[in-house]
Figure 1 (cartoon, rainbow, N blue to C red):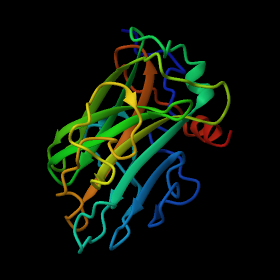
Figure 2: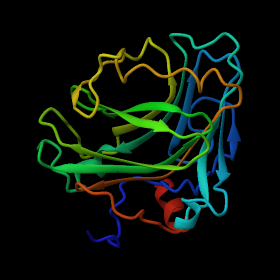
Figure 3: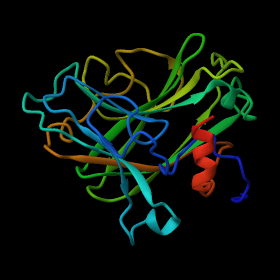
Length: 250
C-alpha cells in the first residue's frame, strides 16, 4: 500500500485545524470547527462543542495531530428521552464523491473511512453513513466498545451499491454521522450494520447505550477523519493549515 499519495483524503479539515467561527459553543450546528457539526435536541443542558488540543504524548499526538473536535455533555437530569440526541456530523459535497474515482454503484468498489475517537465513558457507540441524493441510502456502523479515556483508531471499509446516486455539483452528497447518543425515536435494534439499505429516519442505527448521555460532563473527542477510495486505510494525509483554510473557504 502506498501511504504518501496526495489529495486522497476526501474530507476537508479532517485534522480539525481550522475553526473560523470560534473554539467553543453550546449552539446546535456548525459553530466551531469548520465543516463539522454537533447537533443536539431534547437536552436539559446543552452540550458544548469545542476545538481543543490533543494531549502531548498520546497517540494520535505522536502521529502529528494537534487538534480535535470535543463534545462535552451537559447534565441531562430527566434521563435519556426517546427524542433526545447528541450527534456529530460531516457532509461531503456531491462533486467530491462523484469525481473521486470510487465506482460507487459497484459492490466490488470500495471507500475506506478512518478516524481517531475517545470517550470518557466506556461503552459501544454507533453511527451511520448516508447518501443524500435520489432515494437516500444508509450504511449503519458500530464503533465497537471504546475503553474510557483511551484514543482508538476506527476503520470501516464500505462497498458501493447500485442504488447510490451522486450529482456533479456542490450540494450535500454523503453524510458521516457519529452518535454519542440517539434516542429510540431514531434507532432500532433490528437495524443491520455494515450493509447498505434504504434510509430510515427511525432506524438509523442500533439503539444507543445511554450511559454517556446520562453522565454529567461526559466527553467525546474525534480527530483524523479520513475518507479515501480503496479497500485499505492509508496513513492520514496531513495538509498545512493554509491548505485546509483555503479548502474551507472555497
